[in-house]
Length: 377
Image (cartoon, rainbow, N blue to C red):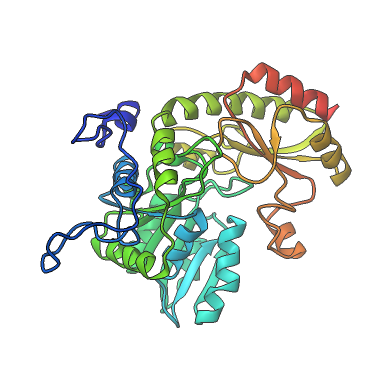
């Protein structure tokens, strides 16, 4: 089954009891137990809910995984994975990483005496050199947020497997439509469902997908204990958003490539980050492991004053936190997604005061280019 058909028909989308064209919202906290001596599938919605489970099945199928667990946010999903580590363990992470992930590592893992090392994504040898006797996890994000650095997923996953280490990949930017890390050897895949999976900027959600039953059961148990469950309404909206994932990703990626080319030619722009550009480091590796380039790009202007002017003059895009909506969203990583890092840490990762991140939507690209051009001028 090809991906666009899979998005609609690869998992149950019709209610078995009524034939309804969408899975119903089971808006219940508790369930009648007709026989308390017999195990019943649903007893309390913190332990499991049929609407949420329908979403989990959908995302698992799209990622070519057996099991998925839904969470109340992307950071809740990230935390659930990182807290599979125990005191004395060590984790290796890509240096250029989502600010929320960085904050969990710095402010939470240290409290549990979990050691960590950040490495440059390439060359691949950086990952093997960082491994210690107590290394239990390797954490990837490719393309990275916000400068879209590329990691060779298959090569790093092999290094991890050879050393008995769990591999994790945040696949939020690419989505299962463009990239499937499980097929490349990764053990756990993370999604911020808030972003492209939902696609309409009206849901906060996270998901973890795996083929490993032990890891799945451990993550579900932790979610049950800590209570970071996804609400029924959000699960239903996320399922509805997934139905248009393919057509949204194709249109927004098309727009992104045209915008990347336009920005790359502009004398107002110092640098553009997007894997579709021939100048992008790691482009060849990215093309070998993904079916597209994605809909997020970043670019640097000449100075922070130019950024302030640009953001005040642009008309069509929404200026704010987040990405992955049908509308184009402009973000300022220096004060938004990566504000938790120190100034020195941000600069070390090329998150400068001149950097703007652009999540491209499905508008007519000619209008977007015209608007961005007038704001630059």
